[in-house]
Amino acid sequence: MTPEIYLSSPHLGELELQYVQEAFSSNWIAPLGPHVDGFEQELCAATETGYAAALSSGTAALHLALVLLGVGSGDEVLCQSFTFAASANPIIYQGANPVFIDSETSTWNMCPDTLETALKDRIARGKRPKAVIVVHLYGMPARMAEIMDICERYELPLIEDAAEALGSSYRGKPCGSWGKLAVLSFNGNKIITTSGGGALLSNDEALVEKARFLATQARDPAPHYQHSVVGYNYRMSNVCAAIGRGQLAVLETRVAQRRANFDQYVERLNALPGVGFQPEPTGFFSNRWLTCITIDPALSDGVTREDIRLALAEQRIEARPLWKPMHQQPVFARAPFYGSGVSEQLFENGLCIPSGSNLTAGQLSKISACIEETFSLPQDEHLPSETA
Ligand SMILES: *Cc1c(COP(=O)(O)O)cnc(C)c1O
View 1 (cartoon, rainbow, N blue to C red):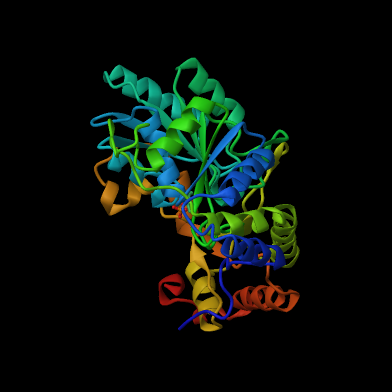
View 2: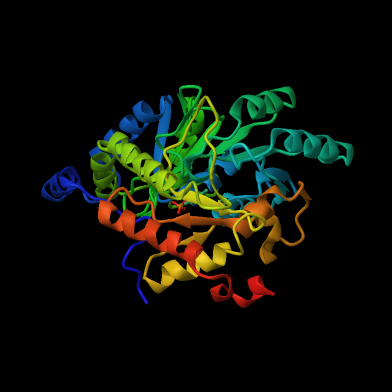
């Protein structure tokens, strides 16, 4: 059954169509073109970074980041475990090995202490990791001061997976501007979309230039087709960039709308027994891409995350468990993991609820009411496993 209310659906406006029409009438559909240049410049301004390469996806951007850092066969890359698989898959594309790091409870992102423990242990085992991938999950910045400090002390390049965090900032500095390289995604469910796309950001001009070169099949400067290294077809088209420019123009409004959704959910649901929300410590500013709730089974009168998810599904409201950690995924079963159960707990008890910037007040109210009702059901109407 298709949902009536989606978790996060595209939200388009007037400006996108105007830019796309311009791309059509000038016959600049592809490849590249003036909207790509414009979009890159506007992304730099929005993220306070020096250089941006517009690409075909966030995954492609992560892959190129690893290529640029020289990650290759047999290398180890330290990666946040609590994330979407696209954060880790490119490590495998390079023939390298992921080492997964658990989260901490104040942001749900990479735990700096665990990162350092893992680093010491990998080095003691004679394996010096080549890079660190930190993720700003659901738009919440990771503890960047501590993580940057560790990366600097160990002279490790940091890649920021800011795919979910465009418009977020930490200590006033945007997500995407902290790492040696950073990645954005404009997939259909992200805070802004180009239908599909991504970007690689850096303050290092040479790195971004090289990314553009690699993303367009690594063509050497010659009149014929000549290649000295293996390239990729990872560039963004001018039409997609046109959509992106229109979307980027309303980013601030989209962030405000998503944050307002979050505030409304807190107001309606915070008093329910055992219900919690992703925290936002002082100095952290999340775009609140998705509102995430947790249900503490010790306090919730027998109501579980699954009870709520199924009750919402019955009313054709899409909700999803939080990301299943990478160290629990069959595909990464053999990867080393450092942690203490934080991300496992979040996966067990957490739920993403509809968070689109185009949700109506009526829809928000319907979703909250459905969750409230789950709590007012008599105990024995919950899932059998909870009544035993
Ligand atoms: C969406 C996402 C990606 C991948 O971006 P695509 O544009 O879909 O390839 C990577 N990491 C995280 C955390 C994401 O949410």
